[in-house]
Image 1 (cartoon, rainbow over the protein chains, first blue to last red):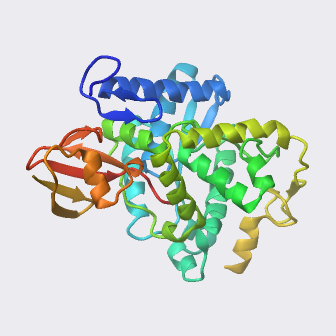
Image 2 (cartoon, each protein chain N blue to C red; image 1 turned 45 degrees about the vertical axis):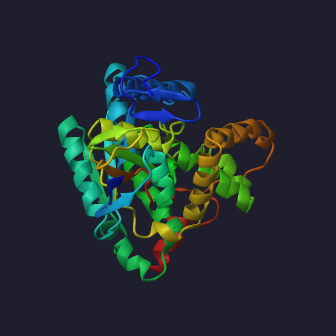
Image 3 (cartoon, chains in turn brown, orange; image 1 turned 180 degrees about the vertical axis):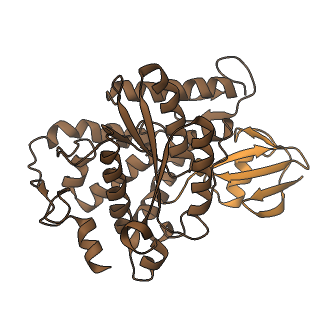
Length: 295
Length: 66
C-alpha cells in the first residue's frame, strides 16, 4: 500500500480511481484539479477583481488560498466577504479563523452581519422558524450586494462536488427544472454578480484532506440548524451510494452535464427587478425583501 | 487487540480482531468512510492500514453541515 507515484506512505486512497497518494502527490493532484476546473469553465480572466465568500470553514479557506496562489500570476485582486448570521457557538469560531487567515495572507476581509443589515441574528430568526433556505436567501443577498459594491466581476464560493451533487439530486426529486438550469446558467442581470465555484469538481473529503495537510485548522463544528434540512437527508443517501459505488458523485454530475443541452429549450421565468431593492427577482419582490417585510 | 478511538471530544477503547484494518473499525462503529478522515498515531492515513494493539485512532468528520 504505497503512493502510486513515488512509493511513499499514502495519506489518501482515491477509491473511484484506485490511486493512492502520499502527501506531496496528493497536494499536486488537488491543485492541478483546481486549476483544471478554473480553465475548463473559464472562471478567471487576467486582472479581474474577485470577491470570495469566506465562512472560515475548510472549503472557503481552501478556495481562497488557491485563488490567491493562482491569482498572483494573473494579476487578480481578491476581496473576502464573510457573513455573520449570528449563530452562537458556531460562527464565532469560523469567523475567527477567517480573520486569522486573511491577516496572514494580507487579503482584505469584509464582515457583514445579519443583525446589522436585517436587525436580528439567525438565532433570533430561528425562534420564528426561519429555516436553512431563508438563511441562504439573506446570506446570498449580502454577498451579492457587497461584491457589487466592491466592484468585483465575480463572486467565488467554496461549493465542492458534494454540494453540487446534492443540489442536483434535490432539484431532480422536486422536479425543479428552473433551479436545475440555474446551476449552470447564470442569471443575466446588471445587479447580479456572476458566481464561480472552483472546487465544484473536487469531493468534500478531498478538500478536507487538503485543508488538513495544509494545516488550515478550520473548525469542524457543524451549523446547529443544518441537521433538520432536506439537504441533510439527501447527503445521507448520496454518502451511502458513494460508499457502495465509489465514483457515483461524479456520475451524477456528468449525467446532469449530459442533460444540459436538452434543457436549453426550457423557458425560464422572466427575471424582473425587485420593486424594493432592484435586485434580480422571479417575482415583483425578491425573496430577501419578502423576508425582511416579515421581520 | 485494543485500540483507543477519539471522535470529536469523545474517547473510548474498542476491541478488534488481530489484523483488523481502519475500515473494519469504521464498520464496527457504523461510520461511513466517505464522511471522515483518519489520523493513526497522529498521522493522516488511509483506511486500508492494518491496526496494531494500542494504536490511537482519531476519526475526524470531513463533511460539514450548513
